[in-house]
Length: 152
Image (cartoon, rainbow, N blue to C red; front, side, top):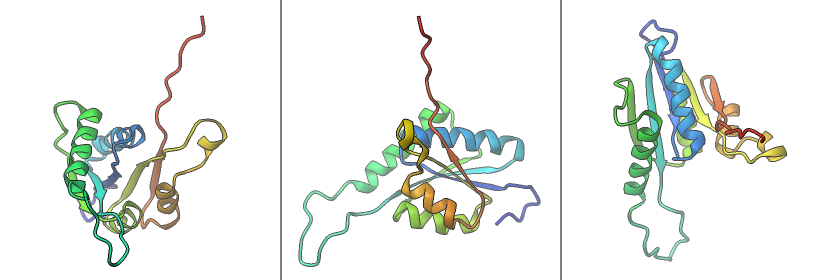
């Protein structure tokens, strides 16, 4: 947790490459700048579970692809110049459990919600729901910005 004396020293963001997670990065940075906080942009990956005795073919490249997704998301959120307070980290583990555990050392967690429009859009995803219920710090769930078109 925060030992620097600042209200928020570490804002953790779960990044999966979705538009919602890119918006979560932007919102975390908007909060971090006036607070003098670090933004910890974490992407999580793991090998798929397999049954004992089965050999998985073609499972290489998960870590590399997750790293590419993280880099692309940070670039999309901030452009070519990543802010100096943003730290990107690739973590092996399931996002739900890993984010809950990482929340022990964060002052806030920011995640996107991958809902669908209409009634379904009122629901949180499994990761964001688990964080709201089990995180060890405050959680901000960010919606994807909607684009409105003018009626002619």
